[in-house]
Length: 350
Image 1 (tube, rainbow, N blue to C red):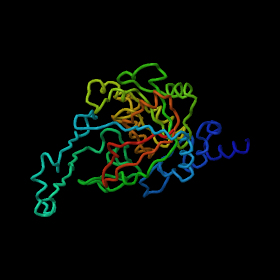
Image 2 (tube, helix red, strand yellow):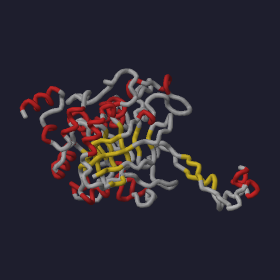
Image 3 (cartoon, rainbow, N blue to C red):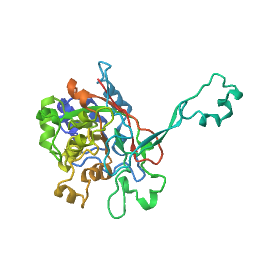
């Protein structure tokens, strides 16, 4: 055991990781350094960030956590009326081809007509989707946030070089690999005994530690950490009650908690059940720590650390069943140029 301890310490993993759940994955973390985190360490052309640390071995270790075959749907249903952060455009779903309202439309193709052989009147439904790439359950890509007068994002990619009217050309969502990793749900609302955290509540390191102690689980290097505020309990069928969602949606982690998760615990990705993960408005000290920003945690995670952010994950069933450790599985819709995987259905496998 002492020899293993020395090896892990030499790798920058820390003694706490040895006996903690999920520690089997720790030895695979090649570029994480305790006290520093990840950073821009994969070369000047890298577009993947911390998810580079996913390996066949780490995915296999994560899947071994699924001993019951139980799947938890972490996606929230979305429609044109759903709640969204005010800085994102609304979505619209419009019937493009339909038997009831589009019969005439479906006669513009010869094979759809009775004269063309379609005497059984076969028709179909298809829709046009006008959607923001940051709505409902989502993964923020590394190009989502820019910072500084040069408008740079992760790894120093700049808007004047890699931006455009038809999406970004570096670190878009097509560069996000399929994510299969150990997941930990940190139920801050549950530990505090409330339905949801109050508006503008800053989740601190002490809050995270208290919840993890109560759950008898830890965040180890390579973990996807998902933080429950209770916001998703108000989503309902479509997130239509904006007034009820808006308050707890502003609760979230501050910069100290984000740094702790990445630099001390080695979180591979960080997310929550809110639209923006971090406490809003940010504390002035957090804003100034990154040179002034309305989204300092986003700047720190996405731009400085290359750590993806998971938003609006439905953690209610996990909380009800007291499931705190699981295999987290998520893939993005591969829409080239987009900056977030939108309207997703990630899973927690138990």
